[in-house]
Image (cartoon, rainbow, N blue to C red):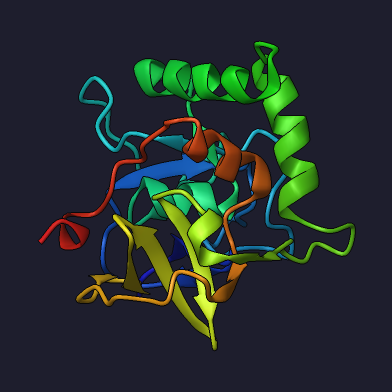
Length: 204
């Protein structure tokens, strides 16, 4: 049985056998039997990490250090409210901070970003925060929802999302009003030039 550790763009965490291309964490949210408890985070530093770091190996959900979560790609992680890890993905983290500074005019610390991101990704009742926007105002790399179908907006096309990868892209009316899943501060970072790493199925 696959573990419940694959994060979706809408913030849900599901069980699926397919492996993601990035990992990350939100602290310890699993129990001794490798199932999730009721909490979906234990701290506000939601990060997105590389799968391969100096050849280190870990048994998933085997200890009490952190709960290993997985993402199809970095765009999914960003949509769920995660940012690049400043340790294992230093260059990407620096690029993310650079883009954040371009938007805000101030160079943020990790804690600054985590505080802002947490306020923009979930409500006090722990529901995901979304908002409405015209499609043509969004940057490449944003995740949106139309009629309960989730899409990646990339290169002026909609890429239908599935947990296993992206389906063939479709052309959309760019003036369409859509529900934006990617938190607003990350939309600003994408607009400032940060380009997330995408799953190979999006590049076919």
